[in-house]
Length: 307
Length: 319
View 1 (cartoon, rainbow over the protein chains, first blue to last red):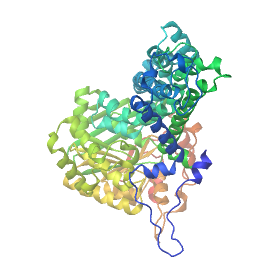
View 2 (spheres, rainbow over the protein chains, first blue to last red):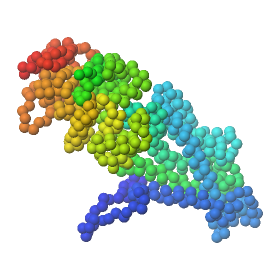
View 3 (spheres, rainbow over the protein chains, first blue to last red):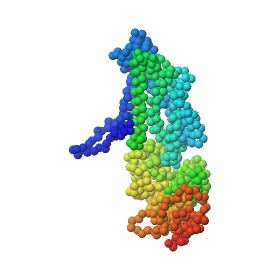
View 4 (cartoon, chains in turn red, cyan):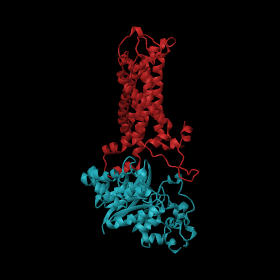
């Protein structure tokens, strides 16, 4: 992937055969050149934008919005893809195209929820540990290590199994296993920023602890956290799908992709479309966010992108 | 003239390793410059940080206008740091990459509320003008500035609280020669306009010569020679000062005798860990070292109008 990025790097403007300097097309928006230099980021952003847009507009652009809920069409059971039903229908006759688009809303809500909860918890704990150091650091990081010692998916499954099965509880269970990564990341950032000249400068200029934390540590640690969030989005979608696939997450009639895959599994040989389209939705969305995460990492870390 | 800052017997260390072994410094009321000369690892940056209480002192005293700096409470320390500021070695790391020039220079004004919110912008622009920068830089971020511009922004920020004393830690060493010159001119101008006292930490003898009245030469955390800058740089007596002097590249001017050249780098850690009090720390590199230099630690004494810690200072005079 790195080679691909390198080969796409913009060459310096060179005079062409007529000896007239080649003009760079004026950028429509400042991020345009960044986007051109990192094509995967570009593809990821377009894909993610399509997924998000389609999910948000689902009630208006799907042919049978009612099929996202608890309806039954006994006359339309397991219809193959056609003009009327692009992705076919499921075992109770609901339009799968409609349900896949609505499913995006569930996944996005879970991703946003999990990221917010784990970033807030992780940043607070990590910044405090890295900034104050000493015994507080030791205690907070040992607690974090305990959480990290369990395989994340197993912990999430165990927790989700303890709570009643629902999309919200699945999100809580995932967040519970996800925050320690943010805590570790934020702690490392805080500890390294604390040693920078500008942290000392702020102290000499009279900044108290609160100011140092909020005005200097938080903004400087947030870049790495932000990149990590975009990298994690794909993993959260997959974990949420896994939980619902195992029956520990969203329940029918909620159109959750993992749940739809689980429902389609016994029909895989007779009605391939039931399992295929929600599966593709998971794949496309996960890949899109992965591209964005990787791309952002390269944008924010020029050494990585150019080496 | 009275003392602005007095440092007595200052000992500093990292963990259990002592790196500064009882240093005395004296800065008079400004305009006055005290130069601190030494190679990397001599403890000069740590001394600068200790003056601002960024590094804890193991022993000794720091007195600012009669007040004991080391026992100051939080509130007193805050007031002290309004009058004493540090200009960092590297303008790059000293500026928060996420803060514009405007917010960086306005930060001390906001913290100490010395200037009303509405007037801060004008004040910041005035400070920028004072260090020779235009107000077009206000919205820029550190990575959009050149090294010289960054260093001047750092100086402007340190001046925002109208300090009486500055600790200038290698203010020009990260800069190109031409940019160095402009920063030096700036410091010269500021010292007269603002009656600044300052401690100028540098390994560059030309900078020390130009900007300081008196200076101390540090070797491995101890003062080896102290006196008026003019005397020390024209007729250095301590073999180490002589070696530093001889190491300055000059254009077509004669050099001091070759016996005083530095022939090798600073000693390795193993010799740094040797217990103090076992002879002169410079003996291993010194061309004049005799038996006594390895058994007795020289103490500062007055020779030819300066203080020097060398058993053979008188012999240096006749060289």
